Length: 139
Image (spheres, rainbow, N blue to C red):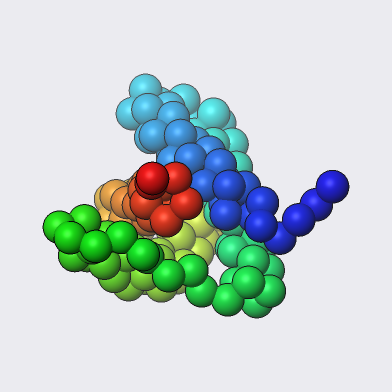
C-alpha cells in the first residue's frame, strides 16, 4: 500500500539511480559509445524528473522534516543541505540547456556546458542521498 511516509526512501533510491546513470553515461561518452551515453543521460534526466515529482508530493503533504541531532553533526548537515539546495536550483536550467544542445546536435556547446553540468548534477544526486541518510537513518 502506498504511504506518503515511504516517499523519502523512494527519493533516495531515485537519487542513487540518477547518480549511477550519470557516472555510467560519462564512462560511455569517454569511450565514444554515443548511443549508450545518450540513453543513460536521458534515463538520468527522467529519473531526476520522477524524483522532483515525488519530492514535491511528499513535501506538499508532509511539510519539512527537522534535523534533530546536536553537536558537530549539525553544522555538517546544514552545510551539505544549503549547498545541495542552492545547486539543486542551478542544476535544473543547466540540465535543460545541456540536453537542448545535444538535442539540437550542437555538440561543441553541449560538451562545454556538460563539463559544468555533470559535476553539479552528480553532487546534487549524491548529497540528496546523504541528506536522506542523515535525516531518516541516523540513530
